[in-house]
Length: 418
Image 1 (spheres, rainbow, N blue to C red):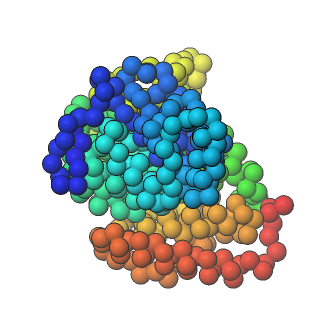
Image 2: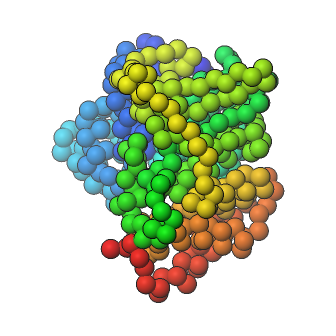
């Protein structure tokens, strides 16, 4: 694998003695923690070059102590200064950067062959794009960059020679089920349909009338996966799966109509691909993010991840059902955004981020989330396949509109906000 600089010309591989350098954007989240666990199992193959976080100074400090990265980045400047002081007290030589510029610098480091893109939300867009432009192997663990500007990421990957490998368990499963040698971004000949699976979240069987009183704590109690609060709420509303639908269209070159979402409570079948000859290929495994992380790090090889082997007799049964649109209106909104295209997915994502933050902050109720998103979609005019400036402008406008709608709700008595 080769890296490229701004000139677009290949430069010599930066591996030292066959060891690949790795940068983790968002190392203190669940994906970052699992990635570090996998990397620590293979010191002969990988070394940690850079780690980044938002505000969790002590957790990043401990990661620096254990993994000795050359660079650490805190998105918040004040947190960066605190980390710098604490590293100095421990006599650790890690260089500390801060802000958006620091994140992009970490993504571009010549010492890194691989960048794990795991920053939650739209904040991950620019550093992910920078890694793609530098021709890295980019392990995509955050959906938002592809949702907001997938056509730009795929175009830049073609220009730079970057490899885009999905780490989301479902998209990684799809990737594993596609023919050998498949490259993301291109349609696969003979593929008929993709089945995206989901657990159904914590409210799969909750009476609809009770959803209005759902608390943030209940929404974050995912039955199968341990995740951050924002993505846990997205899984409860199935917006997470809607964003994955949009992401799959970009990654695998398919139309929204070629993707079907199915609820699979056991979370053992991570996704399936149907072919023209009648074959359906599935990827199965215990629900543990270390499996797709290890797959993407080692691809096209395989390596040990620390995950227990699947026992099919113990699993005993595999159930599937279609999601109820009344229970999961966010899924319907995302599917419509995928069909409309242009900047509509960016508008959808921005409004959802604002709505989920307001719900987690106790400002709005759980069932207000789809209302806020639907309002933003109705008020912000979409643009066709646009360049980054237009996408970011529509993102900002959607956030403004969503906040205005929330302001109109905020004086209303809330249920489930205790």
